[in-house]
Structures are given as C-alpha cells and as structure tokens.
Length: 87
Image (tube, rainbow, N blue to C red):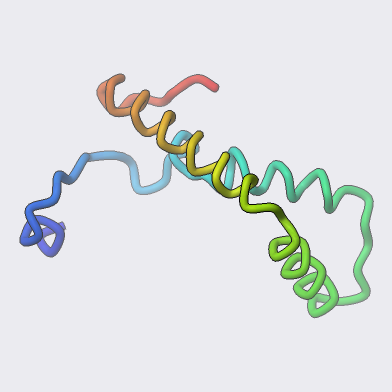
C-alpha cells in the first residue's frame, strides 16, 4: 500500500476479495456460465480455445455494462462504510 500512497492516491480499505467488487463474479462469469452450460470439451485446450473465442466475440457493450455496474457497486460499498452490498 505504501507504493500507492507515494502517488497520492486515495486508498480505501476493503477485504482482499469481495464478491461485491469482483466484476468477474457478478457480470462476466454469469454470462459465460450460461454459455458454457451443457457443453462438453474433449480437453483443456479445446475449452481454452472455446472460451477465448467466446470472450473475443462478445460485443463491447458486455464489457462496458460490467464496468458500469462495478462503478455503481463500488460507490454503494464506499457509501456503506465498506460493508457488503446487496444485489
């Protein structure tokens, strides 16, 4: 944290992992789980290639929407004193 302070950034205390603030947990992986549902892959390489293709094929709006939701959730969390935010 000392490294961040030298840049004079505001550093907020929060748990190292928070479901409230992990965009992959509440946005990206939700969409990916729906897409992956029921699929079977012969090996890890096939899965890796399929997921890479899926990520590249998603419209920019999917990512922009996730970032927008993260901003709102961070704001709620900070205004809530760092406590968890209900969905």
